[in-house]
Image 1 (cartoon, rainbow, N blue to C red):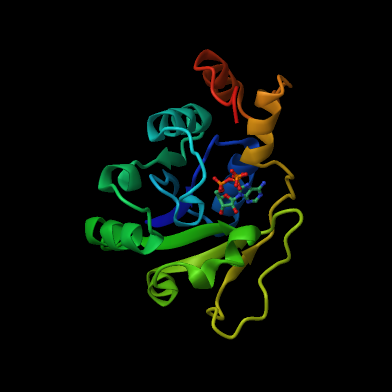
Image 2: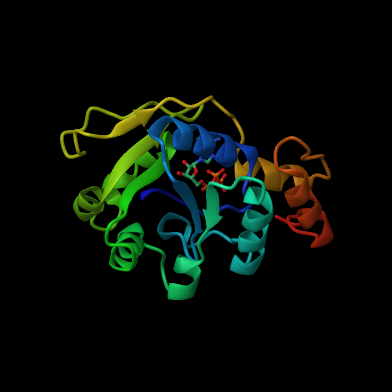
Length: 194
Ligand code: ATP
């Protein structure tokens, strides 16, 4: 099975995530895209993050109409800092015949070399880089693997940060997130104070 692995804080999931993931799925012919919310993001360890239960619930709401999308709580269940290499190792043990494609936005690629065991990551998964407005494509970096897949996706200038700020200011977030996610945010009074 060709599995897309899409990790992130997803605080909250938004249409940027969903649109680019669906493009990659179609282009690469992935059988499934797994959205994997972090418990503790290595690069955002000091930033206040919404509880994993809320982020997971919003993801489940956000992907529910796409039969190719699934949410995995593997990093939340594992506990501790959520390192991608640990997730790939764990998933490799569970699905030895699967082929993994790691989806990352161009903003994340810049930091990829500072991730835990980047060399091991690229042995276990093909890197699929998705363009993101405001961030250059893959830099010519000899330490990055040569076979990065640059997957052109529509440029969607939406970030979770913007959504949190809009909610905090009392501005609407319709069209930025699926309606069920907007309702969840409203019902649980998330992001009122940032
Ligand atoms: P924040 O604003 O809180 O930093 P974010 O919107 O960047 O959040 P994350 O959950 O941190 O969302 O992102 C998860 C993954 O999705 C990352 O690889 C990121 O690069 C990618 N991503 C997020 N938004 C977009 C977008 N609009 N276009 C392309 N990739 C995106």
